[in-house]
Image (cartoon, rainbow, N blue to C red; front, side):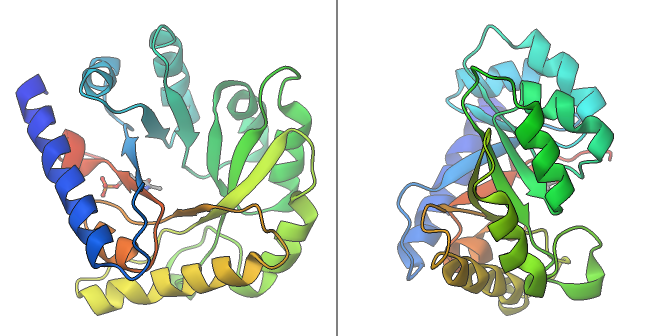
Length: 230
Ligand SMILES: *Cc1c(COP(=O)(O)O)cnc(C)c1O
């Protein structure tokens, strides 16, 4: 994609984020834009970095590893945001800075054990299934507290917060409902995990709703890089 177009998309996106956070009662002034770069070639990531972005999100390990390698000359922060099977944890622990999709103790334990000594702790968000049956990934809300307790003191990882991917909805009120549930779960969890600071919620189509409910990090692909074929 051409550099001018990307620049325009970033400017527009930052304006949306700024306006939404001014309107929000939570008023987070430093919302992080995570550029979701799945399916995009390394050149697009290079261009986005040149335009000022430094956090990138990938869903598929096989696709991500060559990109991480190809871009190792840049100072990028890599976030793993896709479903994570236990046979993939080692490569994620070795090559990423964040994982947003931890929803089982077993996965957290493996990431903890496999994080190489000498690297800073891997930042972890617990993915919560706030839409009930609509999505299969994520810990059930009533099992969240136990999962957080089980992972929060593991070495090699730092529990940073919560993430959700709700079922798509059109109306802003319907979009806000699951994000409100996630924020409330986050606030409740803070009593036992005072260090958590990250609410990873909101994508291209609903980031206004997520920011209205207190998002600190939005994950945006389409509205930065254009539509994807998958
Ligand atoms: C693809 C993806 C996004 C970005 O979605 P867009 O609608 O393209 O902004 C965000 N989060 C996750 C987990 C994704 O898989």
